[in-house]
Image (cartoon, rainbow, N blue to C red; front, top):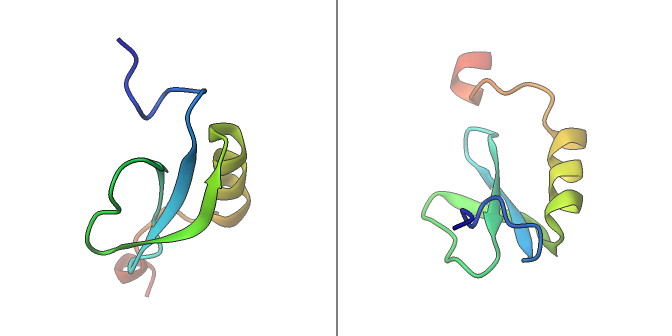
Length: 65
């Protein structure tokens, strides 16, 4: 069985938390507390491209400052 975070045939969103960290998230799942949608439903490939072009420093904001 394929894990829902690895399926190519479903829609995803990109989430962002208050620490500036991104997450690829299956669109059919409820957004967890502390996260907000910053890239609407799209293919897994498009969401990954969005994250790669917008997240250059993976450290949480509290560590960067």
